[in-house]
Image (cartoon, rainbow, N blue to C red; front, side, top):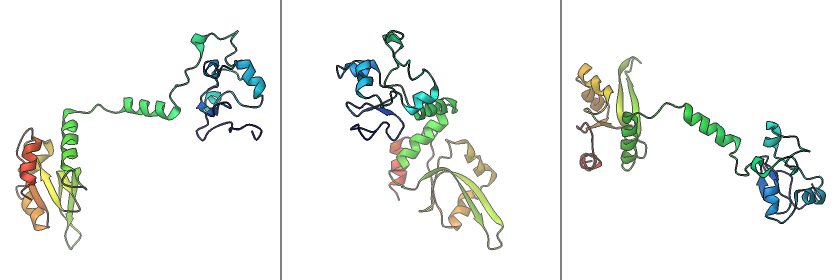
Length: 203
């Protein structure tokens, strides 16, 4: 409202207190107590100022005219001003719907973070496909970790399941080397950062 010093809503649709200019889901008596202002005095002072955020109105929890009338609603029924926003609720729901992280995923994430110290473009579970001049697929391998820019492949042959490819194609590393890839194999079922550093420092 032009006669007020603050806008009615912020960019997220929260209602703005016309006294302090802070956004809330609702202008509640609890908040107005901080200004030593009674709820009915606030409505008389700012008769055209909204009392509820657009989100709160959309939820339809209470009618605008009866919102927080102290004769009808006790303090225990007041809405918490810190109630999470819609975006936070949706993210929390999404996180709960995701599959739990397996020990293998956790190990890959741990190794990936460490390998980023050496390779800015490192990727996990990276597919390498090589086609010949006749556009026929020469080979297709999944790597444990790969920097496709530097053409470096880092394998943990005793750690991850898809390394059974080595038993299927004994020439996997030879084929990669033929096409300019550098292959580093770190043999350990539970590789430590120290062991990884020893192999990578040779580069």
